[in-house]
View 1 (tube, rainbow, N blue to C red):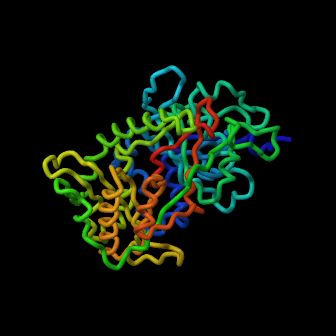
View 2 (spheres, rainbow, N blue to C red):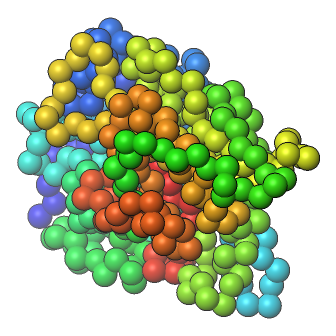
View 3 (cartoon, rainbow, N blue to C red):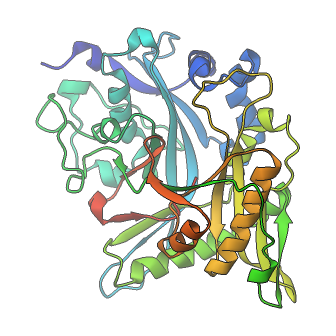
Length: 414
C-alpha cells in the first residue's frame, strides 16, 4: 500500500521564510564557521552578490504538505544551482556539434532529526527530477499518482535541465535509488544503474590525486623553453580566463567524443564562466577575510605573446575560520579547481606553484579531482597518490534517452 503521508506531500519552491528556516536547521551541520546571522542571511547575500546565483539560478526546494505548502514545519529541503553547460553527441554520419545546455547542481540535502527515517529525503529527490528535467524526457513516463499523488508544479525557470549533478557524502547507493519512478511498485528500488534511464544519480569517477606539501619547492624555470615564462594570477586575472576557456572546453568535448577510443556516445561538461569557478572562493569570503591569500592561480605563456595563456591552473582552499573550533577530522587543503596544460612540463611548473602557495599558508595537502590519465605519471613523480574518494562522490542524472553507461562526464573537477 502506498504511504498516505507521501501522497499528502509535494515539492515546492521555498518561500523566503522557508529559506531562512532551512538555513537555521542546517547551520549545525554545514555552517559552523558562520555566525548565526551570517548563515541566516547567506543565501540572500549570494543571490545579491554572486553572478552564479542571480536571476533565479539559485533555488531552495522543500518537501511540504500539499495543504500547507508554506509551513515552516516542512520535512526536508535541498538547493539547486542552474549552471551553464555543454553536451555533444556522436551520431553516425552526422557532424558533431556542441550544444549549450543547463545543468543543475544539487546540494544541501538536509532532513532534521525529527523527520529522519521516514523516507522523506528520498521522496524529495525523486520528485526533484519532475521539477528539473525537460518535458522531452519526462513525457515517456506516467507519474505514479496512486503512490505519490499529483505531480509537483512546474516552475518558470526550471524544467530545462539536460543533466543534474550532486556530490554524495553518504555513499553511492542512496541517490542512485532516488529514481524517476519506483521499479516494480512501491518496494525497494533495484536498478541496474547502467541500463535503466529511470534510475537516480549515478556515481562517476570519484578519483582524486593528493600530494603532501613539500617542505621546499624547487624553481620551475628549468622546465620551460627559452620563449616561455610563468606568472601568478590574482582573483581578477583568474576570472578573466573563463570565457576563453569555455570555448576551448567545447572543442575538447567534440575532440573526445569523436575519438574512436571513446566508448561513450555522448559527453557533457559544466562550464566555468558565468561566475561558476569563482564561487569556489567567494563562498568562503567570510573565512578568507582572515587570511592574506592573493595568489589564486598561475599560468604559462610565451614571452613574446603574454596575453594568450598556454597552460594554467586555478585553486581554492579549505582552511579554518580563525577562532572557530572544528571537528578533529577537518583537514586544510589547497584544491585545484581548473587545470589546462599543454604538456607534462607545464603541469610540473604549475603544480610547483600550487605547492608554493600551500607551503606559504601552512596548508599540508594539495588535491585535484579527475586528473587526466596522461598527467598521472608526472603526478606520481611529484609525490602524488591517487585514490577513490569516500565522500563528495561525483554523481549525475542524465535527462536524455542514452543509458548512463553511454554518457561521459568531462572536466569533473572541483
